[in-house]
Amino acid sequence: MAAYLAPGSIVDVPAAQDAVALRKVFASLTAESCPRTYNFHMHTKHSDGQLVPEALAQQAIDLSLQGFAITDHHQISGNQAAQRYLKAQQALGFAVPQLWTGTEITARLLDTEVHILGFAFNPGHSAIASYFTGVAPQGDRAHAVNVVGAIQQAGGIAVLAHPARYRRSADELIPAAAMIGIDGVETFYAYNNPKPWTPSPKETYRVAKLQSQYQLLSTCGTDTHGMSLLQRL
Picture 1 (cartoon, one colour):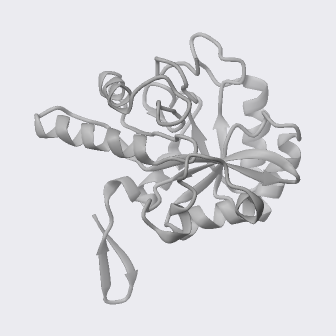
Picture 2: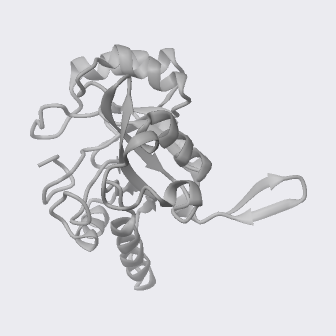
Picture 3: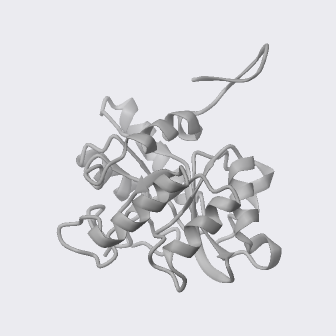
């Protein structure tokens, strides 16, 4: 696709980095969107998951997902391997879902460890490339404002993962995240790993209320670490 940066200038943006299209998807999500239409929180063996990227991508094809993201911790290599696999399958004539770039970065917010998801960024951008070392950032680089800024400078969307799962409450963390310019929150999340997967009603209600109050985007995802994209474990 072509994206306009300034009058008279046009640059080609890979679909995996198309934040404009992804924002539209996030704006359309409901509690029923995951895990069989979209899934924006999954891990491979490139961080702490059990699936190789190619197997994860094949499951996404088999489930007929419309779009997804691989969010390995402090890594982009699993996402890149899955992207190569999808391109190969597409070349063979198979229909494939849209895969956006993704990662999950450990950060500090209100003196609390939180996880920030990044989507649709340019992984080669200097602002974010240093976060792909396989280990959590330290010092100033771990401050949430710097993590969010790095994702956004790289053209991406920054999202507070599972906001009702931390030492401090979502009522404290979401306003603080909004204050530093975060783009969205993971509104639809299953906190107790139910089978079948479904967003936790109590937490979803509270997070959705704050998401609306602070005019943030909503995402959803299973946070898959196991062998099925339909469950966390």
